[in-house]
Length: 470
Image (cartoon, rainbow, N blue to C red; front, side):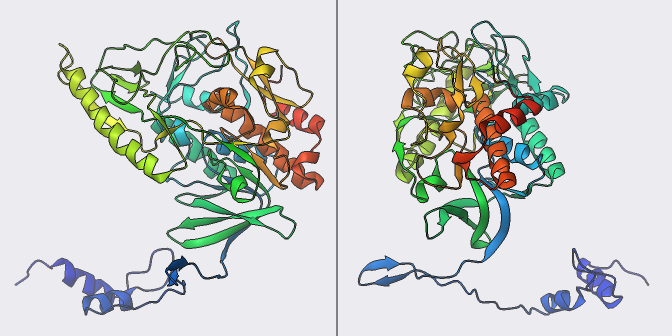
């Protein structure tokens, strides 16, 4: 008389038949499963040496770090600047490694839910940011619910975070870039002369090193160049938390060039559009702006001033912002017609705007923008923002004043505080990232330091990759 086999009996019969193999190999797993079935396990010890307490002080013993990778170019940070840097450099045929602390690419454009792509246009509504950024938006164009409001200046495009994560993952996988996610850059590796030779990372694999000829610090906070000893300015500004709201048909934020302040510090003039509204305690039942997903809005939050390099500040922001965001949705539901509104998502990442600003070969200043400065080493433009005019970005703002073999890209480049409020924005990060990637590739090809890169060659490469230089 037949009877049904239990799951355990079926597994044991398969083991006996030799029909199971370990994933990724041709080795039978029968012995391993048999050990588990018999209640046996394998005991391991880790060679890691823990910190100890010596005379009341916590001491980390000196130890050798395993080398995870050796590469020509190491890009630390997989946000808009880092992905643009890695993709542009790889297209010149050099070896590129991209490392990101979160489990996805895109940085604040995806994990931060900063879905508005501004500033793209100059005062005459002409687009001034192309290159890698335009290529990414074209890939979103062909995806259902990928992007809206393209080519409608001065209205800026709005992307979908999940679609953008997919586009970036797809491009990096196809590019041949060596990529590591869930891997946090925690220190710089420097040689006897103080030149950067790589970075140290923490992950579930432990603390490991990646050695590189050139490092691009696209961490957002300048973590690697700071650890290497490069000079910088520490700044504090507003830290918010963006959310997405579902089952909503109302839009109550003006759409324009993307000013978050009624008055911009560069010009002292009011902005033309405000996708953001207030601080954590005065969201006041706002519905936000449309996204590519039907009946889903994104709601920006300016947030109070905080220290993005202080874990206590960051923790307080996370907790208070999430409580405030939930309260905003509850208030929004009180409006007739919004009873079924729900909180679809809060951003996994806080909306950190600025923390460190590099002391670079050239610091981009308010006076430069107001005076319409032109640079022989121009590597791209920022669009007009909050009535601040479009302006050129010089290569020198990516290069530390002293430390060698490292470039900055993204929000941590060399600017004053007021200009940093513009260069931190996503399309401008694409610009500085692409330039940093190509400059790093030239360093490998021409065997030179970043400060000695041929600007003419760099500009020619930028043109070839579709960038706008004026």
